[in-house]
Image (cartoon, rainbow, N blue to C red; front, side, top):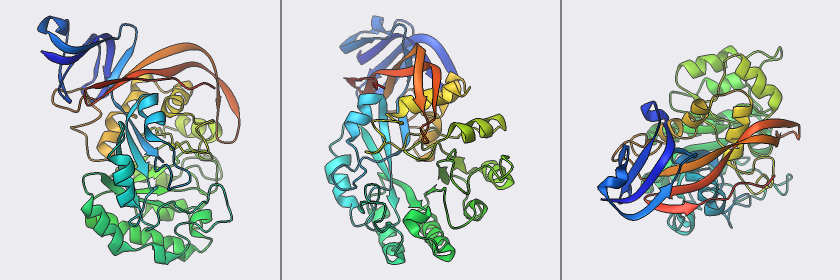
Length: 389
């Protein structure tokens, strides 16, 4: 007997190289089986009829901001994640050592969305009102906020939900001094190495060259905002992918989309993709200043990568299997293998004309978009609502 059966959908599971029409059976909070006519084995709960839908492992958004009410950029996780087809949200540094306990109690523990986090190196996290008040002091502009011992202490205390360390290295966050930026990076590396988890680096518009940043990163680390149009991006002055970027990819550094309000441009994305620099992961960087556009949600960001020529399996790989590995949960999440978490995302691939904007406001018309229909999170079925552009 199954507790939930997803019946008759097109199952695409990149972790198993699977693309087939079949059923998914869930027992308790875990995937139990994939096969034909699982209904014959019996179901004690809900049958989700998925004919004509894409059935995938639960989507993982590797870059979100969901510390609503404390970090001024935070949005509510369930509205913008499970409500839009995402079963796991990785909060990218909204909370630091001093603010993380509240994040755990009042967001992580009570959300239907599974929420895990990259801990901000700054003890205050993103509590400074920087997005609404650009003149505000950035969370790492004063090096005293970058307390290595406190970050290690909290990362160890909440090791089950803290998946790495986040730093933002733009000059608006750390200031103009190059040596200060290098010290922030050095301290982040020290914390990451001590806890055995990756660094996620927000880059673009930095006081130090991108190559200097990449030189400190190792396998498993994450560079977010890969296609931004600011200074010190993945393209050099001639529009070519920097050799240092290719070297970082070769040694296992992950380059993440992190669309955001100011970090995704058609020009850079198209040029980089044409030169073979595909993102390792696709994420939204969803926050209060982009939920009404140009980001809207992860489904819209993923649809933009389809528009740019990535195949559907390639896109799905980057919102399921790869981000699960990035947060150390490859066997539990991002897969429909029996025994994995019972997280499933159901989408409709809709043909039409869709106005997609990048972070500069440039608009292009896409011919298809992914629309969330429902998610199953740990065996619980929840409906979704697509974004309205």
